[in-house]
Length: 323
Length: 271
Image (tube, rainbow over all chains, first blue to last red; front, side):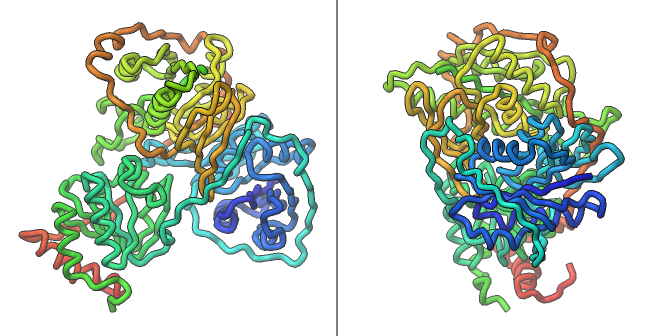
Protein backbone atom coordinates (compact mmCIF):
# COMPACT_ATOMS: atom_id res chain seq x y z
CA UNK A 1 0.00 0.00 0.00
CA UNK A 2 1.45 3.35 -1.01
CA UNK A 3 1.29 5.60 2.02
CA UNK A 4 2.39 9.16 2.79
CA UNK A 5 2.69 11.32 5.90
CA UNK A 6 1.60 14.94 5.79
CA UNK A 7 3.34 17.36 8.14
CA UNK A 8 2.53 20.98 8.79
CA UNK A 9 5.78 22.85 9.38
CA UNK A 10 3.94 26.18 9.60
CA UNK A 11 2.94 25.62 13.23
CA UNK A 12 4.97 26.14 16.40
CA UNK A 13 3.66 22.74 17.47
CA UNK A 14 5.42 21.06 14.52
CA UNK A 15 7.93 19.05 16.54
CA UNK A 16 5.27 17.67 18.91
CA UNK A 17 3.00 16.78 15.96
CA UNK A 18 5.85 15.07 14.07
CA UNK A 19 6.91 13.04 17.10
CA UNK A 20 3.34 12.06 17.89
CA UNK A 21 2.76 10.98 14.30
CA UNK A 22 6.00 8.99 14.51
CA UNK A 23 4.69 7.29 17.66
CA UNK A 24 1.45 6.49 15.84
CA UNK A 25 3.38 5.00 12.90
CA UNK A 26 5.44 2.92 15.28
CA UNK A 27 2.37 1.50 16.97
CA UNK A 28 0.01 1.04 14.04
CA UNK A 29 1.90 0.50 10.81
CA UNK A 30 3.64 -2.64 9.58
CA UNK A 31 6.46 -3.17 7.07
CA UNK A 32 4.01 -3.28 4.09
CA UNK A 33 2.03 -0.17 4.89
CA UNK A 34 4.56 2.10 6.56
CA UNK A 35 4.74 5.41 4.66
CA UNK A 36 7.97 5.89 2.74
CA UNK A 37 7.38 9.51 1.88
CA UNK A 38 6.34 12.74 3.63
CA UNK A 39 4.82 15.92 2.26
CA UNK A 40 5.97 18.77 4.49
CA UNK A 41 4.47 22.26 4.20
CA UNK A 42 6.40 25.28 5.46
CA UNK A 43 6.75 29.02 4.92
CA UNK A 44 9.82 31.23 4.63
CA UNK A 45 9.47 32.00 8.35
CA UNK A 46 10.55 28.49 9.36
CA UNK A 47 14.04 27.01 9.46
CA UNK A 48 13.87 24.56 6.55
CA UNK A 49 16.84 22.46 7.72
CA UNK A 50 15.52 22.21 11.28
CA UNK A 51 12.19 20.87 9.95
CA UNK A 52 13.95 18.13 7.97
CA UNK A 53 15.25 16.59 11.20
CA UNK A 54 11.68 15.53 12.05
CA UNK A 55 10.81 13.74 8.81
CA UNK A 56 9.95 10.12 9.70
CA UNK A 57 10.41 8.67 6.18
CA UNK A 58 13.22 8.17 3.62
CA UNK A 59 11.79 10.70 1.15
CA UNK A 60 10.29 14.13 1.65
CA UNK A 61 8.55 16.60 -0.61
CA UNK A 62 9.20 20.05 0.85
CA UNK A 63 6.42 22.40 -0.12
CA UNK A 64 6.88 26.11 0.47
CA UNK A 65 3.61 28.03 0.81
CA UNK A 66 2.80 31.67 1.52
CA UNK A 67 1.23 31.03 4.91
CA UNK A 68 -0.88 28.34 6.50
CA UNK A 69 -4.48 28.35 5.39
CA UNK A 70 -6.30 25.04 4.70
CA UNK A 71 -7.63 26.23 1.32
CA UNK A 72 -4.07 26.98 0.12
CA UNK A 73 -2.68 23.72 1.50
CA UNK A 74 -5.45 21.72 -0.20
CA UNK A 75 -4.73 23.48 -3.50
CA UNK A 76 -1.01 22.70 -3.05
CA UNK A 77 -1.78 19.05 -2.27
CA UNK A 78 -3.90 18.84 -5.40
CA UNK A 79 -1.01 20.27 -7.41
CA UNK A 80 1.50 17.75 -6.05
CA UNK A 81 -0.70 14.66 -5.80
CA UNK A 82 -2.80 15.15 -8.94
CA UNK A 83 -1.55 11.98 -10.66
CA UNK A 84 -0.44 10.08 -7.56
CA UNK A 85 -2.01 6.77 -6.57
CA UNK A 86 -1.43 7.15 -2.83
CA UNK A 87 -3.71 4.79 -0.90
CA UNK A 88 -3.16 6.14 2.62
CA UNK A 89 -2.47 9.65 3.90
CA UNK A 90 -1.54 10.08 7.56
CA UNK A 91 -2.15 13.63 8.75
CA UNK A 92 -0.74 15.00 12.02
CA UNK A 93 -2.85 15.03 15.22
CA UNK A 94 -4.45 18.37 16.01
CA UNK A 95 -6.70 20.92 14.37
CA UNK A 96 -4.97 21.37 11.01
CA UNK A 97 -4.46 17.63 10.49
CA UNK A 98 -8.14 16.86 11.10
CA UNK A 99 -9.34 19.73 8.88
CA UNK A 100 -7.14 18.64 5.99
CA UNK A 101 -7.81 14.90 6.31
CA UNK A 102 -11.60 15.25 5.94
CA UNK A 103 -11.49 17.73 3.08
CA UNK A 104 -8.69 15.96 1.19
CA UNK A 105 -10.55 12.63 1.38
CA UNK A 106 -13.69 14.29 0.00
CA UNK A 107 -11.77 15.82 -2.90
CA UNK A 108 -10.05 12.52 -3.71
CA UNK A 109 -13.33 10.55 -3.36
CA UNK A 110 -11.75 8.58 -0.54
CA UNK A 111 -12.72 8.04 3.09
CA UNK A 112 -11.59 9.75 6.26
CA UNK A 113 -11.64 9.43 10.01
CA UNK A 114 -10.21 11.91 12.49
CA UNK A 115 -9.32 11.78 16.20
CA UNK A 116 -8.35 8.17 15.53
CA UNK A 117 -7.01 6.09 18.41
CA UNK A 118 -5.83 3.06 16.44
CA UNK A 119 -5.89 1.54 12.97
CA UNK A 120 -5.56 -1.97 11.57
CA UNK A 121 -5.00 -2.81 7.94
CA UNK A 122 -6.97 -5.56 6.25
CA UNK A 123 -6.95 -6.85 2.68
CA UNK A 124 -9.05 -4.15 1.00
CA UNK A 125 -9.98 -1.82 3.76
CA UNK A 126 -8.82 -0.17 6.91
CA UNK A 127 -10.35 -0.56 10.36
CA UNK A 128 -10.03 2.58 12.47
CA UNK A 129 -11.23 3.25 16.00
CA UNK A 130 -12.14 6.53 17.66
CA UNK A 131 -13.88 7.65 20.83
CA UNK A 132 -17.61 8.47 20.83
CA UNK A 133 -20.51 9.01 23.26
CA UNK A 134 -18.64 11.81 25.04
CA UNK A 135 -15.52 9.63 25.12
CA UNK A 136 -17.20 6.77 26.99
CA UNK A 137 -16.84 4.24 24.17
CA UNK A 138 -14.51 3.27 21.37
CA UNK A 139 -16.31 3.09 18.00
CA UNK A 140 -14.91 1.02 15.12
CA UNK A 141 -15.30 2.01 11.48
CA UNK A 142 -14.48 0.22 8.25
CA UNK A 143 -13.05 2.54 5.62
CA UNK A 144 -13.73 1.11 2.15
CA UNK A 145 -12.72 3.78 -0.27
CA UNK A 146 -9.12 4.71 -1.01
CA UNK A 147 -7.36 6.95 -0.37
CA UNK A 148 -7.81 6.53 3.37
CA UNK A 149 -7.16 9.83 5.14
CA UNK A 150 -6.45 9.47 8.85
CA UNK A 151 -5.68 12.03 11.55
CA UNK A 152 -4.79 10.51 14.93
CA UNK A 153 -6.28 11.80 18.18
CA UNK A 154 -4.03 14.18 20.07
CA UNK A 155 -2.27 12.28 22.86
CA UNK A 156 -3.39 8.81 21.73
CA UNK A 157 0.26 7.67 21.68
CA UNK A 158 3.42 8.87 23.37
CA UNK A 159 5.70 11.12 21.38
CA UNK A 160 8.49 9.16 19.71
CA UNK A 161 11.63 11.14 18.76
CA UNK A 162 12.36 10.98 15.03
CA UNK A 163 15.76 9.61 14.07
CA UNK A 164 17.29 12.05 11.61
CA UNK A 165 18.49 10.57 8.30
CA UNK A 166 21.70 11.47 6.49
CA UNK A 167 20.45 10.15 3.17
CA UNK A 168 17.04 11.86 3.14
CA UNK A 169 15.80 12.25 -0.43
CA UNK A 170 14.39 15.73 -0.88
CA UNK A 171 12.16 17.10 -3.62
CA UNK A 172 11.35 20.80 -3.34
CA UNK A 173 8.27 22.69 -4.53
CA UNK A 174 7.79 26.42 -4.29
CA UNK A 175 4.03 26.96 -4.39
CA UNK A 176 3.95 30.44 -2.90
CA UNK A 177 2.41 31.70 -6.14
CA UNK A 178 -0.33 29.07 -6.22
CA UNK A 179 -3.99 30.16 -6.10
CA UNK A 180 -4.57 32.38 -3.08
CA UNK A 181 -7.35 31.89 -0.59
CA UNK A 182 -9.38 34.83 -1.92
CA UNK A 183 -11.95 34.70 0.86
CA UNK A 184 -9.45 35.89 3.49
CA UNK A 185 -9.11 39.66 3.42
CA UNK A 186 -7.00 40.21 6.49
CA UNK A 187 -5.02 37.76 8.64
CA UNK A 188 -3.55 38.26 12.07
CA UNK A 189 -1.99 35.50 14.18
CA UNK A 190 -2.35 35.72 17.94
CA UNK A 191 -0.08 33.33 19.87
CA UNK A 192 -1.85 31.26 22.50
CA UNK A 193 -1.53 32.53 26.05
CA UNK A 194 0.66 29.90 27.65
CA UNK A 195 0.26 28.54 31.11
CA UNK A 196 3.48 26.89 32.30
CA UNK A 197 3.88 23.59 30.48
CA UNK A 198 0.87 21.81 31.96
CA UNK A 199 1.71 18.60 30.19
CA UNK A 200 4.62 17.70 32.45
CA UNK A 201 4.37 19.12 35.96
CA UNK A 202 4.80 17.59 39.37
CA UNK A 203 1.52 18.71 40.91
CA UNK A 204 -1.49 19.85 38.92
CA UNK A 205 -4.61 21.18 40.64
CA UNK A 206 -7.71 21.32 38.47
CA UNK A 207 -10.87 23.20 39.41
CA UNK A 208 -14.31 22.24 38.14
CA UNK A 209 -17.84 23.59 38.08
CA UNK A 210 -18.30 22.49 41.69
CA UNK A 211 -16.28 25.54 42.74
CA UNK A 212 -19.40 27.52 41.96
CA UNK A 213 -18.00 30.97 41.19
CA UNK A 214 -15.23 32.91 39.50
CA UNK A 215 -14.05 34.09 42.92
CA UNK A 216 -13.60 30.51 44.14
CA UNK A 217 -11.75 29.58 40.96
CA UNK A 218 -9.31 32.45 41.48
CA UNK A 219 -8.93 31.48 45.12
CA UNK A 220 -8.07 27.89 44.15
CA UNK A 221 -5.56 29.18 41.58
CA UNK A 222 -3.86 31.24 44.30
CA UNK A 223 -3.80 28.21 46.61
CA UNK A 224 -2.33 26.06 43.81
CA UNK A 225 0.45 28.54 43.23
CA UNK A 226 1.12 28.82 46.97
CA UNK A 227 1.57 25.04 47.01
CA UNK A 228 3.97 25.22 44.05
CA UNK A 229 1.42 23.53 41.80
CA UNK A 230 0.18 24.40 38.32
CA UNK A 231 -3.47 25.19 37.84
CA UNK A 232 -5.97 24.03 35.25
CA UNK A 233 -9.75 24.01 34.83
CA UNK A 234 -12.49 21.85 33.34
CA UNK A 235 -14.47 22.96 30.27
CA UNK A 236 -17.50 24.44 32.10
CA UNK A 237 -15.16 26.70 34.11
CA UNK A 238 -13.33 27.86 30.97
CA UNK A 239 -16.57 28.43 29.04
CA UNK A 240 -17.96 30.48 31.92
CA UNK A 241 -14.81 32.62 31.50
CA UNK A 242 -13.91 32.00 35.17
CA UNK A 243 -10.42 31.16 33.87
CA UNK A 244 -8.60 31.55 30.55
CA UNK A 245 -9.00 28.93 27.83
CA UNK A 246 -5.25 28.27 27.99
CA UNK A 247 -5.90 26.55 31.33
CA UNK A 248 -8.43 24.13 29.86
CA UNK A 249 -7.66 20.48 30.66
CA UNK A 250 -9.28 17.76 28.55
CA UNK A 251 -9.80 16.56 25.03
CA UNK A 252 -9.99 20.05 23.55
CA UNK A 253 -7.32 21.52 25.81
CA UNK A 254 -4.19 20.20 27.47
CA UNK A 255 -3.59 16.49 27.92
CA UNK A 256 -1.55 16.57 31.12
CA UNK A 257 0.64 13.87 32.65
CA UNK A 258 1.63 15.17 36.10
CA UNK A 259 2.97 13.13 38.99
CA UNK A 260 -0.12 14.07 41.00
CA UNK A 261 -3.40 15.62 39.89
CA UNK A 262 -5.90 16.99 42.40
CA UNK A 263 -9.34 17.31 40.77
CA UNK A 264 -11.36 19.71 42.94
CA UNK A 265 -15.08 20.05 42.27
CA UNK A 266 -14.78 18.20 38.97
CA UNK A 267 -17.54 15.74 37.99
CA UNK A 268 -15.18 13.66 35.86
CA UNK A 269 -16.83 13.77 32.44
CA UNK A 270 -14.93 11.46 30.11
CA UNK A 271 -13.81 14.31 27.84
CA UNK A 272 -12.22 15.96 30.87
CA UNK A 273 -10.76 12.74 32.23
CA UNK A 274 -8.84 12.22 28.98
CA UNK A 275 -6.85 15.29 30.01
CA UNK A 276 -5.65 13.78 33.30
CA UNK A 277 -5.79 10.02 32.73
CA UNK A 278 -2.02 9.82 32.25
CA UNK A 279 -1.42 11.28 35.73
CA UNK A 280 0.55 8.90 37.93
CA UNK A 281 -1.75 9.58 40.89
CA UNK A 282 -5.19 11.19 40.93
CA UNK A 283 -6.90 12.70 43.99
CA UNK A 284 -10.58 13.68 43.75
CA UNK A 285 -12.24 16.14 46.11
CA UNK A 286 -15.98 16.22 45.64
CA UNK A 287 -19.15 16.48 47.71
CA UNK A 288 -20.83 13.72 45.65
CA UNK A 289 -19.57 10.18 46.40
CA UNK A 290 -21.31 9.00 43.21
CA UNK A 291 -19.42 11.43 40.98
CA UNK A 292 -17.59 9.66 38.16
CA UNK A 293 -14.28 11.24 39.21
CA UNK A 294 -14.38 9.39 42.55
CA UNK A 295 -14.17 5.97 40.86
CA UNK A 296 -11.60 7.25 38.40
CA UNK A 297 -9.29 8.55 41.13
CA UNK A 298 -6.73 6.70 43.23
CA UNK A 299 -8.04 8.35 46.41
CA UNK A 300 -11.00 10.63 47.08
CA UNK A 301 -12.12 13.04 49.77
CA UNK A 302 -15.88 13.47 50.00
CA UNK A 303 -16.28 17.02 51.24
CA UNK A 304 -16.41 20.64 50.17
CA UNK A 305 -13.40 21.10 47.91
CA UNK A 306 -12.76 24.69 48.99
CA UNK A 307 -12.63 23.76 52.68
CA UNK A 308 -10.38 20.75 52.06
CA UNK A 309 -8.02 22.72 49.85
CA UNK A 310 -7.74 25.49 52.45
CA UNK A 311 -6.79 22.92 55.09
CA UNK A 312 -4.38 21.24 52.69
CA UNK A 313 -2.68 24.56 52.01
CA UNK A 314 -2.13 25.12 55.74
CA UNK A 315 -0.14 21.90 56.14
CA UNK A 316 1.54 21.57 52.73
CA UNK A 317 5.10 22.38 52.01
CA UNK A 318 5.58 23.89 48.53
CA UNK A 319 6.11 21.12 45.97
CA UNK A 320 9.74 21.96 45.24
CA UNK A 321 10.69 21.65 48.91
CA UNK A 322 8.89 18.36 49.59
CA UNK A 323 11.48 15.65 50.19
CA UNK B 1 -26.95 38.64 5.67
CA UNK B 2 -28.60 35.23 6.04
CA UNK B 3 -27.17 32.88 8.62
CA UNK B 4 -28.14 29.24 9.05
CA UNK B 5 -27.17 27.64 12.35
CA UNK B 6 -27.25 23.84 12.32
CA UNK B 7 -27.55 21.99 15.58
CA UNK B 8 -28.22 18.63 17.16
CA UNK B 9 -29.81 17.48 20.38
CA UNK B 10 -27.76 14.93 22.27
CA UNK B 11 -28.73 12.68 25.19
CA UNK B 12 -27.09 13.86 28.39
CA UNK B 13 -24.93 10.77 28.84
CA UNK B 14 -23.36 12.05 32.04
CA UNK B 15 -26.69 11.05 33.64
CA UNK B 16 -26.09 7.39 32.79
CA UNK B 17 -24.95 5.18 35.63
CA UNK B 18 -21.96 2.88 35.25
CA UNK B 19 -24.24 -0.13 34.74
CA UNK B 20 -26.13 1.67 31.93
CA UNK B 21 -23.06 1.58 29.72
CA UNK B 22 -23.94 -1.60 27.84
CA UNK B 23 -23.66 -2.12 24.10
CA UNK B 24 -26.97 -3.48 22.76
CA UNK B 25 -27.56 -5.85 19.83
CA UNK B 26 -27.65 -2.96 17.40
CA UNK B 27 -24.21 -1.87 18.56
CA UNK B 28 -25.61 1.18 20.30
CA UNK B 29 -25.95 2.46 23.86
CA UNK B 30 -29.54 2.80 25.08
CA UNK B 31 -29.92 6.48 25.97
CA UNK B 32 -33.69 6.64 25.45
CA UNK B 33 -34.38 7.22 29.17
CA UNK B 34 -32.16 10.29 29.60
CA UNK B 35 -33.18 13.74 28.49
CA UNK B 36 -31.67 15.36 25.42
CA UNK B 37 -29.98 18.73 25.45
CA UNK B 38 -28.33 20.91 22.89
CA UNK B 39 -24.97 19.50 21.89
CA UNK B 40 -22.45 21.77 23.60
CA UNK B 41 -20.56 23.13 20.55
CA UNK B 42 -23.87 23.68 18.71
CA UNK B 43 -25.16 25.62 21.71
CA UNK B 44 -22.13 27.89 21.39
CA UNK B 45 -22.84 28.32 17.66
CA UNK B 46 -26.44 29.37 18.34
CA UNK B 47 -25.43 31.88 21.01
CA UNK B 48 -22.62 33.28 18.86
CA UNK B 49 -25.13 33.82 16.05
CA UNK B 50 -27.41 35.71 18.45
CA UNK B 51 -24.48 37.82 19.64
CA UNK B 52 -23.60 38.57 16.03
CA UNK B 53 -27.20 39.66 15.50
CA UNK B 54 -26.94 41.95 18.54
CA UNK B 55 -23.69 43.41 17.24
CA UNK B 56 -25.10 44.24 13.80
CA UNK B 57 -27.88 46.36 15.26
CA UNK B 58 -26.96 49.96 14.72
CA UNK B 59 -24.52 49.10 11.91
CA UNK B 60 -27.26 49.11 9.30
CA UNK B 61 -26.65 45.44 8.50
CA UNK B 62 -29.82 43.37 8.16
CA UNK B 63 -29.17 39.96 9.67
CA UNK B 64 -31.62 37.07 9.39
CA UNK B 65 -31.11 34.05 11.62
CA UNK B 66 -32.35 30.60 10.65
CA UNK B 67 -31.91 27.25 12.35
CA UNK B 68 -31.88 23.68 11.05
CA UNK B 69 -31.60 20.31 12.71
CA UNK B 70 -31.46 16.84 11.23
CA UNK B 71 -32.93 15.11 14.21
CA UNK B 72 -35.97 13.33 15.58
CA UNK B 73 -38.63 14.78 17.86
CA UNK B 74 -36.24 15.04 20.81
CA UNK B 75 -35.14 18.35 19.31
CA UNK B 76 -38.66 19.84 19.56
CA UNK B 77 -38.17 21.78 22.85
CA UNK B 78 -34.99 23.35 21.47
CA UNK B 79 -36.80 24.37 18.28
CA UNK B 80 -39.49 26.09 20.35
CA UNK B 81 -36.82 27.95 22.30
CA UNK B 82 -35.22 29.11 19.05
CA UNK B 83 -38.61 30.33 17.85
CA UNK B 84 -38.95 32.32 21.07
CA UNK B 85 -35.44 33.73 20.53
CA UNK B 86 -36.81 34.98 17.20
CA UNK B 87 -34.96 32.85 14.73
CA UNK B 88 -36.76 33.64 11.49
CA UNK B 89 -37.19 30.07 10.25
CA UNK B 90 -36.76 26.93 12.29
CA UNK B 91 -36.58 23.68 10.35
CA UNK B 92 -36.34 20.06 11.38
CA UNK B 93 -35.40 17.37 8.88
CA UNK B 94 -36.80 14.05 10.04
CA UNK B 95 -34.24 11.29 9.45
CA UNK B 96 -35.39 7.82 8.43
CA UNK B 97 -32.65 6.14 10.41
CA UNK B 98 -30.21 6.91 13.19
CA UNK B 99 -27.58 9.25 11.71
CA UNK B 100 -25.24 9.20 14.70
CA UNK B 101 -22.22 8.16 12.64
CA UNK B 102 -23.38 9.48 9.26
CA UNK B 103 -21.78 12.87 8.90
CA UNK B 104 -21.70 12.59 5.09
CA UNK B 105 -25.48 12.16 5.01
CA UNK B 106 -26.07 15.04 7.43
CA UNK B 107 -23.73 17.31 5.44
CA UNK B 108 -25.54 16.33 2.22
CA UNK B 109 -28.91 17.29 3.74
CA UNK B 110 -27.59 20.65 4.99
CA UNK B 111 -25.90 21.54 1.70
CA UNK B 112 -28.93 20.50 -0.39
CA UNK B 113 -31.25 22.45 1.90
CA UNK B 114 -29.15 25.57 1.26
CA UNK B 115 -28.97 24.94 -2.47
CA UNK B 116 -32.55 23.91 -3.10
CA UNK B 117 -34.66 25.38 -0.30
CA UNK B 118 -33.14 28.47 1.28
CA UNK B 119 -29.91 30.11 0.16
CA UNK B 120 -27.64 31.40 2.93
CA UNK B 121 -24.52 33.53 3.30
CA UNK B 122 -23.12 31.85 6.39
CA UNK B 123 -23.53 28.36 7.84
CA UNK B 124 -22.56 27.91 11.47
CA UNK B 125 -22.46 24.75 13.57
CA UNK B 126 -20.50 23.18 16.38
CA UNK B 127 -17.27 21.44 15.47
CA UNK B 128 -18.73 18.09 16.54
CA UNK B 129 -21.72 16.66 18.35
CA UNK B 130 -21.32 15.44 21.93
CA UNK B 131 -22.24 11.85 21.08
CA UNK B 132 -21.13 11.11 17.52
CA UNK B 133 -17.92 13.15 17.86
CA UNK B 134 -17.33 12.72 14.12
CA UNK B 135 -15.85 16.23 13.76
CA UNK B 136 -16.58 16.11 10.03
CA UNK B 137 -19.99 17.65 9.29
CA UNK B 138 -18.92 21.34 8.92
CA UNK B 139 -15.93 20.38 6.76
CA UNK B 140 -18.00 18.13 4.50
CA UNK B 141 -20.76 20.74 4.26
CA UNK B 142 -18.17 23.29 3.07
CA UNK B 143 -16.80 20.84 0.51
CA UNK B 144 -20.28 19.95 -0.81
CA UNK B 145 -21.18 23.63 -1.14
CA UNK B 146 -17.77 24.52 -2.58
CA UNK B 147 -17.37 27.15 0.16
CA UNK B 148 -14.36 27.90 2.34
CA UNK B 149 -14.45 26.81 5.95
CA UNK B 150 -13.11 28.35 9.13
CA UNK B 151 -12.87 25.90 12.01
CA UNK B 152 -12.73 26.22 15.81
CA UNK B 153 -14.24 29.73 15.86
CA UNK B 154 -14.28 31.39 19.28
CA UNK B 155 -15.61 34.82 18.33
CA UNK B 156 -17.46 36.30 15.35
CA UNK B 157 -17.88 40.03 14.74
CA UNK B 158 -19.57 41.86 11.88
CA UNK B 159 -17.36 43.83 9.48
CA UNK B 160 -19.80 44.87 6.77
CA UNK B 161 -22.58 43.28 4.70
CA UNK B 162 -20.20 40.94 2.91
CA UNK B 163 -17.52 40.26 5.51
CA UNK B 164 -17.14 38.88 9.01
CA UNK B 165 -14.21 38.99 11.41
CA UNK B 166 -13.66 35.54 12.88
CA UNK B 167 -11.26 34.64 15.67
CA UNK B 168 -10.49 30.94 15.54
CA UNK B 169 -8.17 28.53 17.23
CA UNK B 170 -5.28 27.03 15.28
CA UNK B 171 -2.75 24.48 16.52
CA UNK B 172 -0.39 27.03 18.01
CA UNK B 173 -2.64 29.93 18.95
CA UNK B 174 -5.45 31.95 17.44
CA UNK B 175 -5.96 33.61 14.08
CA UNK B 176 -8.15 36.67 13.59
CA UNK B 177 -9.30 36.81 10.00
CA UNK B 178 -11.58 39.02 8.00
CA UNK B 179 -13.43 36.68 5.66
CA UNK B 180 -15.71 37.12 2.71
CA UNK B 181 -19.03 35.31 2.57
CA UNK B 182 -20.28 32.74 1.75
CA UNK B 183 -18.53 30.70 4.38
CA UNK B 184 -19.00 27.74 6.70
CA UNK B 185 -17.90 28.39 10.28
CA UNK B 186 -17.42 25.57 12.76
CA UNK B 187 -17.48 26.68 16.38
CA UNK B 188 -14.97 25.48 18.97
CA UNK B 189 -14.41 26.29 22.65
CA UNK B 190 -15.98 29.74 22.83
CA UNK B 191 -16.16 31.39 26.28
CA UNK B 192 -19.47 32.83 27.51
CA UNK B 193 -21.50 31.05 24.87
CA UNK B 194 -24.26 29.30 26.81
CA UNK B 195 -27.54 29.85 24.99
CA UNK B 196 -29.53 32.73 26.46
CA UNK B 197 -33.03 32.12 27.84
CA UNK B 198 -35.96 33.73 26.05
CA UNK B 199 -38.24 35.96 28.12
CA UNK B 200 -41.69 34.72 29.08
CA UNK B 201 -43.17 37.34 26.78
CA UNK B 202 -41.09 36.10 23.85
CA UNK B 203 -42.07 32.53 24.63
CA UNK B 204 -45.75 33.52 24.57
CA UNK B 205 -45.47 35.73 21.48
CA UNK B 206 -43.13 33.67 19.32
CA UNK B 207 -42.63 30.22 20.90
CA UNK B 208 -45.61 28.64 19.17
CA UNK B 209 -44.60 29.65 15.66
CA UNK B 210 -44.76 26.76 13.17
CA UNK B 211 -41.77 24.49 12.90
CA UNK B 212 -41.19 23.38 9.36
CA UNK B 213 -40.62 19.62 9.14
CA UNK B 214 -39.06 18.03 6.07
CA UNK B 215 -38.45 14.35 5.43
CA UNK B 216 -34.90 13.17 4.79
CA UNK B 217 -36.43 11.20 1.89
CA UNK B 218 -36.77 14.50 0.04
CA UNK B 219 -32.98 14.70 -0.20
CA UNK B 220 -30.51 12.86 -2.34
CA UNK B 221 -28.56 10.93 0.28
CA UNK B 222 -25.06 9.64 -0.50
CA UNK B 223 -23.60 6.37 0.74
CA UNK B 224 -21.38 6.71 3.79
CA UNK B 225 -17.70 6.13 3.04
CA UNK B 226 -16.92 5.09 6.60
CA UNK B 227 -19.05 2.24 7.84
CA UNK B 228 -19.66 2.05 11.59
CA UNK B 229 -19.19 -1.53 12.76
CA UNK B 230 -19.11 -1.83 16.55
CA UNK B 231 -18.69 -0.20 19.96
CA UNK B 232 -16.70 -1.14 23.01
CA UNK B 233 -17.03 0.49 26.42
CA UNK B 234 -14.08 2.38 27.86
CA UNK B 235 -13.80 2.04 31.62
CA UNK B 236 -11.78 4.56 33.57
CA UNK B 237 -11.44 3.09 37.01
CA UNK B 238 -8.79 3.35 39.70
CA UNK B 239 -8.88 2.35 43.36
CA UNK B 240 -11.21 5.19 44.38
CA UNK B 241 -10.26 4.81 48.06
CA UNK B 242 -12.29 7.19 50.21
CA UNK B 243 -10.39 9.08 52.90
CA UNK B 244 -12.54 9.11 56.02
CA UNK B 245 -12.53 11.84 58.66
CA UNK B 246 -14.70 14.04 60.86
CA UNK B 247 -13.80 17.36 59.29
CA UNK B 248 -12.15 18.84 56.20
CA UNK B 249 -9.07 19.47 58.36
CA UNK B 250 -8.77 15.83 59.41
CA UNK B 251 -9.30 14.55 55.87
CA UNK B 252 -6.77 17.02 54.48
CA UNK B 253 -4.22 15.95 57.08
CA UNK B 254 -4.68 12.24 56.26
CA UNK B 255 -4.55 12.97 52.54
CA UNK B 256 -1.32 14.92 52.84
CA UNK B 257 0.51 12.58 55.20
CA UNK B 258 -0.54 9.26 53.67
CA UNK B 259 -0.65 10.10 49.99
CA UNK B 260 0.29 13.52 48.75
CA UNK B 261 3.60 14.01 50.50
CA UNK B 262 4.91 10.49 49.80
CA UNK B 263 3.93 10.68 46.13
CA UNK B 264 5.49 14.10 45.69
CA UNK B 265 8.61 12.90 47.51
CA UNK B 266 8.79 10.06 44.97
CA UNK B 267 9.07 7.52 47.78
CA UNK B 268 7.74 4.10 46.96
CA UNK B 269 4.60 3.56 48.96
CA UNK B 270 1.94 0.88 48.92
CA UNK B 271 -1.56 2.16 48.31
